[in-house]
Image: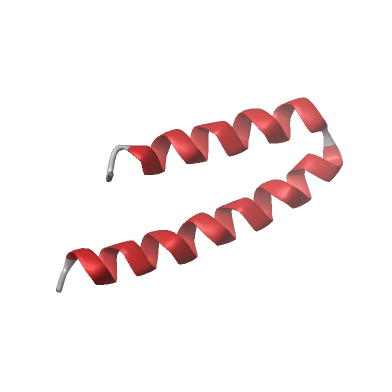
Length: 47
């Protein structure tokens, strides 16, 4: 499960490169989502 996180980030970066400036905004939102989900995942994992 921890291995999927970097792959997700990689996918988001690839998408942002292929979609241009609007993709950069989506990228920022995507990173925010990854950080949020990652933070929740870490909180669950550390219980």
